[in-house]
Image 1 (cartoon, rainbow, N blue to C red):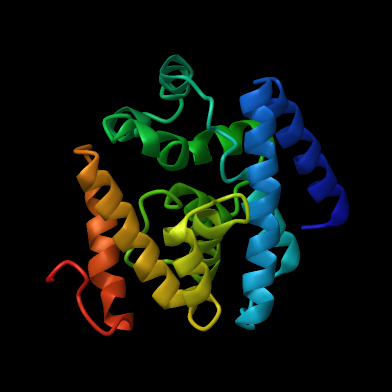
Image 2 (cartoon, rainbow, N blue to C red):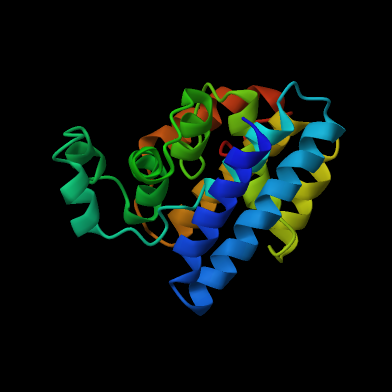
Length: 204
């Protein structure tokens, strides 16, 4: 992925998000912050990922944040599997369905990038390294404030996989306390990653 591609993608992401006004500006800043945090984590843990791929994944991960249900249904004419995905919890749709928007509007078809975007809200029991970087970076980027985020940042300093496990734990706990539905893959991911912890956090 060369520099021209990255510049084009950066421009298109900025244009799309900034059409949403203040909330779009905030989402664009968040996307830039996530991309930067991914790079930092990659360097810190000596991950074998191209910097260009990391940047693109971070900058586009919320590209479909403001896509409407009607727009997804229009896309489903080309991608029928979207219909079933639209039954997932609303907060996960921009991730699970976002890759279809990204393929159509940004012409990005790299399966590793698309999978990282697809599972950045639900988690995945078999994350790629790129997926782990995005999942953790999205959770701990610098604009996140609170003890939970501080704790996962500290964990991420020494173990990316432990940071994934803790982020999944806090995500499940938050959703349960809010009495909202969560995607079953989130628990599947936690069950896969809890082996990197000293204990099962849901047994206490």
